[in-house]
Length: 216
Length: 216
DNA sequence: GCATGTGAAAAGGTTCACAGCC
DNA sequence: GGCTGTGAACCTTTTCACATGC
Image (cartoon, rainbow over the protein chains, first blue to last red):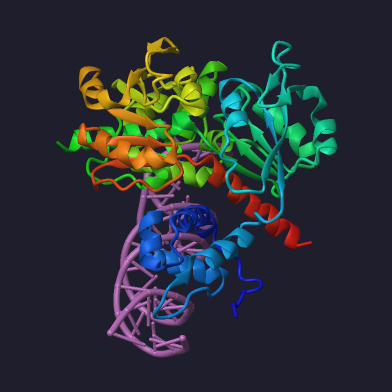
C-alpha cells in the first residue's frame, strides 16, 4: 500500500518538477516500458536521481526497493497529486499572435485541460472563429467565466491592459492565472499567478552569452 | 563612480530577475520618471525591496543613499550586465502555431535581439514567407547558422524531433537555446538551455487549484 | 544484491536590521 | 532624515550517504 503524508506541504520547487516527471513517465509508457528506476527517470527529466527520490518522498512512497517504479502507477499518483484527474476549464484573453497560437495548441496534452472560451477587446477579432470558438468581447468576461465554469485564465493581452484584465478576472472569482504579459501582476494573496516571459528568457540567455564572451 | 565586482559570480536567481527590473525601469522612464527608490522599483517588479537591493549589490553600487536610483543610468547598467548592448541574432526552428507566433512577436523589445532566420522540416512550410522571412529547410541548419551569424536558437518543434534538432544546433556551435518542446534536452555542460513549458505551467496551476479545493 | 527512501550536511537564496552616507 | 548597501540570521533546496526492505 501507499502512504500519503497528509499535511506535510510539498515544496514549491518539487511541484514545479512534477510535470517533468509525468511527461517522462508518459514517454516511457508510450515506448512500452513498464518499470523504471530513479536514475532512468531522473535522466529523462533532467534532474539528479537523489532529487527525484526526494521529490517523490514528499508525495508518498511509490517504489519497490531493489526494483524501481511501476511506470503506470507512478504516473497515476503524480496525475492525482497535480490535480489533473479533475477537469480544468480555461479562458484565453487576448487573441493576438500568441493567443491564437495558444488557442490552437493541441497539446493541452495532460488531459484535464479544456479551452472553454476565447476573449478579446478588438472589434476586428470579436465575433471571428478561432480554433473552433467564436471570440467574445472581454467586457463580457465575468459572464463568460460564470457561464462556462472557467477556473483558470490565460492572459495573452498587451502589457498595458494586463493588470486591468487581471483585476476583472480575479473579481470574477478565478484564482489561477497564467500570464504572458511582461509585467508583475498585482493580485491578492490567494491568487496564484505563473508568468511566462519570452523576452525575459532571451535576456537571461544573453547574460550567459555575455558571461561566456567575458571569460575568453 | 560605480564599482563593479569583477569576478564575484552573480547568482542565477538574481540573473533571472534582472529582466523584471529592466522592464520596470523602462516603464518608469516611459512615464517620465527620472528617479526611483528600491521600494518603488521592487513593487513594480513583484519582489521585496531588500531583495532588489541585494540583487543590485551583486552587480555593483548604483544608487545614492537617502535619494534612490537614477532611472536611466540604472537601466543602462542592467542592460550592460545582461549583455544587451551587443546584438543577438536568433533562428527559430519549427514554424508551426507557436513558431509563427514567435516569429511575429514584435516585442523582441529589449533591443539587441533580431530574428535572422526561420527553419522548418515540412515541405509545405519551407519556402513560404513568414514575418518577412522565407522559411528555410532545417537540413540547412548549420549553413544558415553560419551564414547569418546566429548565436541563439529558439526551438519550437514537436517534442519527438527536438533532441535531434538540438544536437545539430549544438554541433553548429550555438551555445544558447530557448526550448519550447516539452522535454529535457540533453546538451553539453557549456550549453545553456532555458525551457518554456506551457502545459507544465498549467499543471502547476492545477496543483494549486487542487490544494485549495482540498483545504476547504 | 540492489534501488528506494530519508535523515543529516551542504549549498543556495531570502529576509532582517542596521551601519553608512548623502 | 531617509534610502542605500550589506553582513548576519534564517529559511529553502539540493546533495550526500546509508539504513531499509524487497
